Length: 188
Ligand SMILES: [Fe+2]
Image (cartoon, rainbow, N blue to C red; front, side):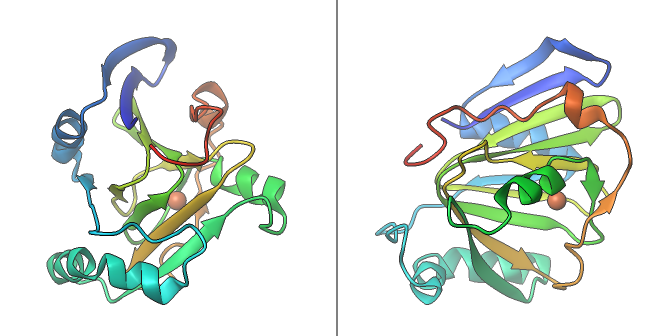
């Protein structure tokens, strides 16, 4: 189940808001220019489906999104037990960072949490199968898919160099660990 939890950035133990419906999540994030949406393909591609098949399944959504945002390309990424250097990769995602372009991800399978740090608040967004999220350029954030990730995701780019992370050096992610339920793989 998708979930948004909001905290003050100096009070990790006090939840200000906790919502689980896609509508409430989208509505809370919209004022910060964060897009949260649900996409459903007529047939969900199998977890090991070729990238072309995954892209094709969501083509109408991708075309609309790319038309609205000016994004030029999309690809498919998988993070699972066979991903090389998984612990190091996880550590990289888990440090607060920004990008010079929007980070747009759609969860075809599995789940992961994007945690965004905006004007004194922390917005922890647990995304599950069927969720689209865009993290605007320049917004500090971190990401985790748990210790045993099993994720298939679409990435949408305007400029493939833009997703290189710029680390803020703030250790806030240690105080607000992304919360991903243990059953991180599989359906929402
Ligand atoms: Fe990022």
